[in-house]
Structures are given as C-alpha cells and as structure tokens.
Amino acid sequence: MIPAERSKWFGWWFARDAKRRIERRFDRIVVRGLDVLTRAGQDGPVLVVANHTSWWDPLVVVHLFWRIVPLEAYAMMDARNLRALPFFRKVGAFGVDLQDAADGARAIRYACKRLDKPGRLVWIFAQGREVPITVRPLGFRPGAAEIARLARRAIVLPCALRYEMGSRPDPVLYLSFGEPVSLPAEQGRCTNVLEAAVTAELERIEAVVVSGETSEFEPLYAKRDGTLSLLAIRALALLTRAPGR
Image (cartoon, rainbow, N blue to C red):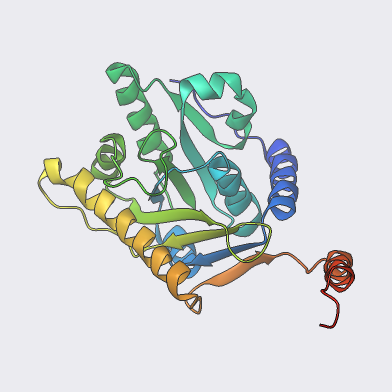
C-alpha cells in the first residue's frame, strides 16, 4: 500500500494546472448535488463512490476538491499507476495493489483512518479501472462497500461522471452527486446497493442528455464563444454559398 503525501503548495499548483487543462478541453462542466456534497462535508467525513470512465477523472477530482469544495480529499488509485505517476500522492492519492488481497485490506484500513472527522473525504472509483460509459452492470469491486461498512461515521455519497459530445466542438462534463446512501445490514448486498445508486445518477445524466433540460444542474465552468472562430465560419459559409442563394 502506498500512502498519500498531501502537499498544500504542490496541490495548489497542480490544481491550477488541472483547471487550465480542463478549461482548454471542455465546453462546459455542469454539476448536480454540489450542495449535498458540501453539506455532507460539514456534517461528517464523506465517502464518495463513483464510476470510472475516462483519463480525465482524476484531474476532475483534483480540480473539484482543491479549487471548488474545500475538503481534505483523498482518493484510492491503482498502485501500478501511482508508481508511474507518483506526483498524485501530493494531491491525496494512495495506492493499492488490486491483485493482492492483503494489500487491499491495508488500503481499506488506511481509507477508514482518513474518514475520522468532518471535512475529510475519500473518493473511490469502485470499478477499479476505466470502463466505457455504456457498460452495464458497472461491475463494482467490493472495496468501496467494505470501507463504507467499517467507517461508520462516514456519509456515503454516490457520484456519476459522464463526458458528452454535442452540438459544439468541445465536450460537456456532467457530474451528479446523489443523496446519502444507507447500506443494508447484509454485508453481501452492500456492493449492489452502491452500484445501483451510482447507476441511478448515470441514468439521471442520461435523461438530461436526451431531453436537453439541464435545470437541475448548475455550471461550474462555461467556455466563452470564440468570436474569431464564429466570424471565420460565417465568412466560409458566405464564400461557399451556392450562386443565387
């Protein structure tokens, strides 16, 4: 197990870089349930259980908790990836060998120790790897449910992430945080309950993508229209217009 080594100054710099990358590549970031997340962080330690669909996911988490929501956040990461990208330790990542049950147990205990007081948060990508957004069932590993079961003070929130191309050149990032999850007494059902909660948030995003009705979501960021690009498109349309039209 590789422990985190959070650094305030490195985290500030890295989050600034993550923000710059995100704003350059995305048209918009819209989020639902940010008030739920903020309130949970005030009331107790928070365990966020999310799907994992993109290379961008860790940078989104860094941006969210170092610049938007002021919580002391940690995230579980595949130890192999963390060894290749050790700077993620400085922003709260801790590593687990997904093929070693004993190391998994150590990582679970480490996560539970982080969940000891309000203002702290642990983020788990419960699939353990990047999985295409269309795959169902999501295939959650049992670690997140075990952390939720052992960290009794933690408020458990489901979160869904989706990246969607639309009518503009750059994609939109959707984030949806659900209400706190109450886990059943039967240990064997906990993983299924968490997976169902995250799936429900993905379905909520799906409904928004299909309908175009985004009133439940608030913008975290929206790219300004590129005036020069719009003028260039209009000029090209004028030059290529058929005669007589």
